[in-house]
Length: 127
Length: 127
DNA sequence: AATTCATATGAATATATCATCAGATATCGA
DNA sequence: TCGATATCTGATGATATATTCATATGAATT
Image 1 (cartoon, each protein chain N blue to C red):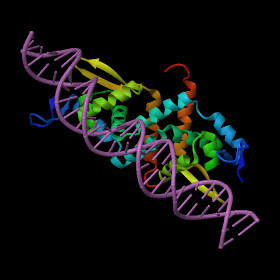
Image 2 (image 1 turned 180 degrees about the vertical axis):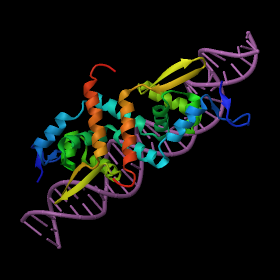
Image 3 (image 1 turned 60 degrees about the vertical axis):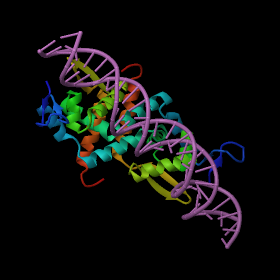
Image 4 (image 1 turned 90 degrees about the horizontal axis):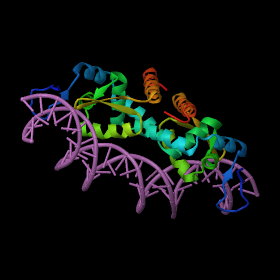
């Protein structure tokens, strides 16, 4: 039976296992870290952007028009997406004449993409 | 100089490095896989849900009210979040009387959470 | 310097997502 | 079976995010 943490009757937080709760709470990532982490995941959590990232993971470096071709996405769209990814430090740009070549800028992300995909490949047909 | 893939003048897809584009395109995750992957990332990409996941990663198993307490989130909110996570196979539920205990249901996710957090911890102070 | 090309930007709309509230279920204990 | 408790569900408004179109920038080519 959940116990009241505070003596107040209503608007009290009910807790079953105070020790475990406290330990979990204490070890949660700090706000700033959480923000960073979730931003990364959120940006990876869009199909169009994920296609871009996987294309870059494969190709190493691609210009905007090639990214558009490889992913079947309108160039404007690609550009918008790249700006978000660039701002977040996930992707980096290299200018070459009037083209701009993009590549993954974060070992972190490369690892996440790699692991996730590998995992997907291994679990064809069953969890 | 980008070459036209099709003979059409306008609305043609311009490509700089056809070989690389084709290789990248060929190795993109299939639609279904992409959908799965991005759903996972998208669900991890929300601060409230991420708190729940990290709490579970720490505690192993927690009931709704303890999750609410540990993360400082209203129980209703926690419940909604858990439904999404449960439906996606990220979290699993175990009923014990009138309480329901939740835990991570996916080694995949546990790994991603673990790695990300570890990575965060190691890069205090500079990318 | 004018034109073309690759990419970027801004604004507007469309759409998805989250928080909140009211109420519904389901389990337990009396 | 009644009330209390833990959790769930559905509907709504607020907010964020993606897509699209029109246009701007900036580099090369003539």
